[in-house]
Every structure is written in structure tokens, then in C-alpha cells.
Amino acid sequence: MQTQLLPGTRSVILECVGAVVGLDEALAIVSASHEMNTHRVLLRDRQLPAEFFELQTGFAGEFIQKLVNYQITVACVFEDGRLFGDRFREYVAEAKRGRQFRSFADEGEAIAWLEGQ
Image (cartoon, rainbow, N blue to C red):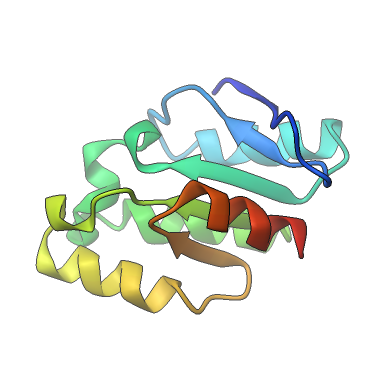
């Protein structure tokens, strides 16, 4: 998992820039966030594997739960929710109100939320 600090923000936010290929990547994100001294992480839908969007695989729940267990605050940008199935769209709608994991359609809104955390 490739990460970097998100430039141009008021707070220290870890940006995932590489593709997530497995559940172990959650622990790599946790490790990188501790190294960078932040608990804020920005993910984008294009970095997530197909299994993330198929809720029956359990990938999304397990991946996000690992991050939340380590007190990582995650904003995930899902740019075009119409590309996903009905059940995943319901999951994204529910995550728009989350305290540690929240979904956004707009990256600027995701960054603003993370900066307030």
C-alpha cells in the first residue's frame, strides 16, 4: 500500500495513493498513519478492489473495521454511486452519517470533514 501526506491541508491527513489489494492493506494504513502521526485517512473508490463493492464478500466491513479498531478516521470518496449495486449504495448512504468512517461524493467535502476530526 502506497501512502503519502495529503498536501495543502490544515491538518495532517494520510492519503492512500496505491491500490488496495487485500485485507492486510488495512494494517499497512494503520502503520503508515502512526508513522506520520495522524489518525485521518483519505481513500478513493478507484483504489479499492472489486470485492470491496460486493458486500457479500465481507471485504468492506472487515477492511473498515480493522481501521476503526485502531481509531483511524476514514473518509472515502465514492465519486459516482450509480456504478455500484443497490446494496452497496445503501451501505454508502448509511456511511454518510458515520463517526469514524464516512462516505462522500466530493473529495473537498471529505477533506473538510477529516480536518474537523
